[in-house]
Length: 266
Image 1 (cartoon, one colour):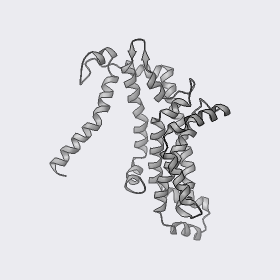
Image 2 (spheres, one colour):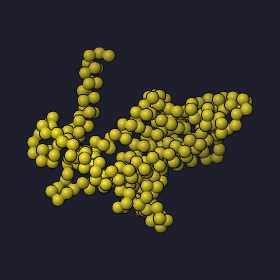
Image 3 (cartoon, one colour):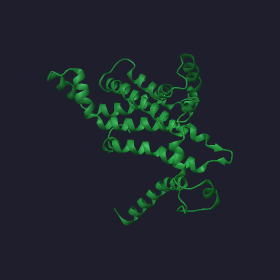
Image 4 (cartoon, helix red, strand yellow):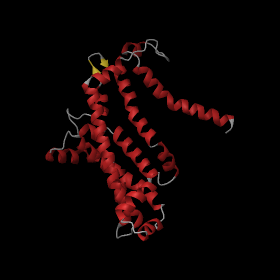
């Protein structure tokens, strides 16, 4: 790597990290400091904003609500997409490509299109204002994405692997769960990452399909207004904490992400 390329990379990393650094500095300052003067390094840092997040039930319950439907959505999407992607990668049947394209068209549609149908359906069957309602709504977008990613990986696995397992006398469940899925660990890691990120940051469906009981963190952050105005410090602290789950997910699937982004359909 030349010196010019090295400096370009350094400036690019600074450019990416600057918003996160500024968010942390705001989270460590009071509202009067934030609106009163410009400081690169907080002169009077405080943890009061983080204390408000962890002690106020409105905030920590919102974090729990978000994590509950995000985990549900990720698990449902992976469990549905794995067999579907395997079928698309191994079998040819009438209308298979049309069905595959139809799955992708659901991903292309904006979430606002489905707001009214989901709201009326969930209200009539008693699912409104539950984590399951948001998880199932997000599946409309994450399942097609998961099938698309996994199918690209699975198509790259030779079909001879299936035949060898059959010749060795292994049942299909044994082959699928003990051989085929471990081969596609990278694909599952990438899929898990994208499902988690979509469901974690999505606002429109989460805001419409939840009420006072299961408000997620993305909804609570849009309502951080007190009598004195916008509570900048608490909002910055909440924003800093919302980055943590994404970092944890990336940490656990980091090895699979490297392989996944290098191969397959990503």
